[in-house]
Length: 168
Image (cartoon, rainbow, N blue to C red; front, side, top):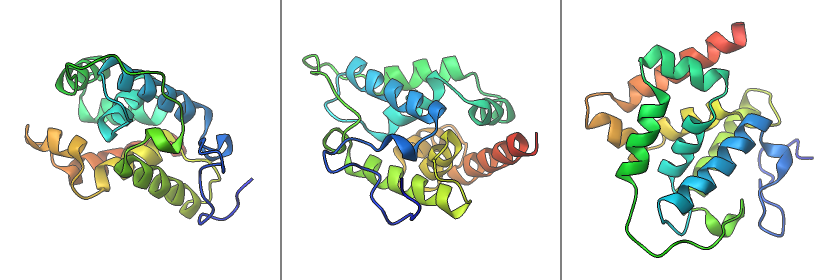
């Protein structure tokens, strides 16, 4: 089990280490794989991570969407439609390094580092969400900016939702 944030989040085999994500985040990552296949992409991209978070929100994600006044099901449908591409069906994908885009690899590592910075050994959905919005040139944040919601506002809302959940 890793106690140092500089240890890789992947096993030598390339699989994501199960001890670096909490149960809700593991489920969101499995959902991200499903949305990757459903939208005919051959690797998990940041929009797929976001779709996975929307598909099975933990209390932090639910608080974030509530604070934002967003309907997670509607957002999920919009992102699925926006990132669908006509292509041959994708073969099975795994939670393995080779099936993640470079941006997703960076985001996962940054989210893991964020969790460690806050004294947690496992990254949460909020670590992923906050990292997703605070990463420069985030395509997901850009989608929101097109409708007038800035990345800074999305991040601030996520941080406030995280605090709300932690405070109980």
